[in-house]
Length: 261
Image (cartoon, helix red, strand yellow):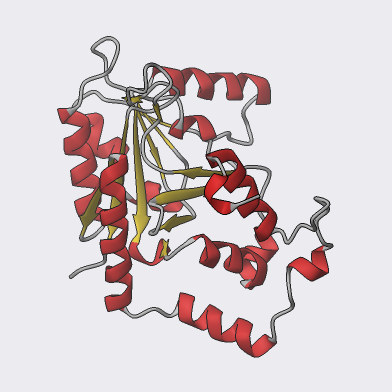
């Protein structure tokens, strides 16, 4: 088949076959042939490069993230510290209106970084409850899960952290963990995520490398579910007109704590 005569589908399939080194008959090679072994020195060197980036290099990745985020309507907001993040989130929640009704409610992950923001205290004087997606050991399991679902469904803002943020594709990587319901990032019409500067990595290659070779990530594994989120929900199915919020949040705001003094 001549390259010039390939349609988009054929080009896509050709790329996939080349990536998995498929034979002309369509059979792919075995795993050992696909993934060559790396020497320990190469692994150590690449891990060191990723995990020990200078602050200047981290800020360059932040710049790349912001550049890639703009076309997909992901709003990236660098903030200096936890206090600045909490204040910025509070102001945004006060500024935004629910898609339905007038009562403002917020759902948030039970997560160390989110806990440090003290959003419940910050919003209490405005009578805006912050529900945490936490199942306590004393809870009746079915009733506790149902209560968390109902609280998330009632919330117009969902607040999460993330495991990584991939700069090249402006993608949040969120593995599944206890007390961190996926619905918090999917059901409310506005998703707000909070990460630290050192959680930004360059590309998918770095992410997969860390999953395979970083001892901490390797021990944890990919978990039961892993979600990659690139901007708010969007679709162009109807007359090729881009619509946000069709299958999930219509807005995604990412707060990056830079650690500036």
